Image (cartoon, rainbow, N blue to C red; front, top):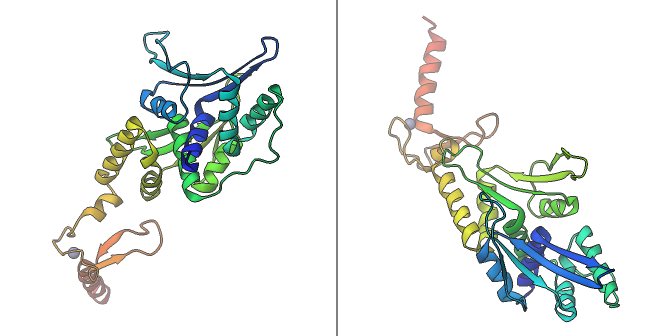
Length: 276
Ligand SMILES: [Zn+2]
């Protein structure tokens, strides 16, 4: 298997998977549950689940159908755990070690994490498939990429690859809940460059969301729209020679028509000379 496929599986497993160990029942289960059939089919194509994908009908009317991918046999579980281990965060890594111990298989020392760029991108894509969210309201307001998890180390690893201004925290509202860590990107150019890297690894549903977000950004009013214009309000063309980009301040990076600016300065200076 390609390192990028293993990384994608590990990212997705980190977001939607679980390892359960029952000592009394002498039983280990490795599961992934999600509502995205296309993503599950991809996982199943890479690591086939011997019993086939299970369909769990929605428990309530507003719920969606869940799909379950499950490994129950020792050999399948060991192969899978060893495959994803190098990418796992602290919490799941310790579960994976427990799982190997359960089967009396020695844990590899510190697992080696392939640190090549492509594997990291694939890992982010898998993680995003599970826990990421692409907000793309057509109004263009509140457009963002966000990912919420209770595993701080995972959110920090994502942030190290794609830095956000600040990792947010949401304290638990109930005693048995955990603190959530929230990574969010709201800058159009950053969202575009991140999606350009990770969306080739997405399944159908997320790819469609990524395209929606790109379309919203293209049509968003404000700075981005100004850049799409070819002429200023007075009809002067925005050629490179005629464009002035404001270097700092509140309107930083905004584009100004040099002809209009010159005309304005002539008026301004003449008023200054002759204040009447
Ligand atoms: Zn102009």
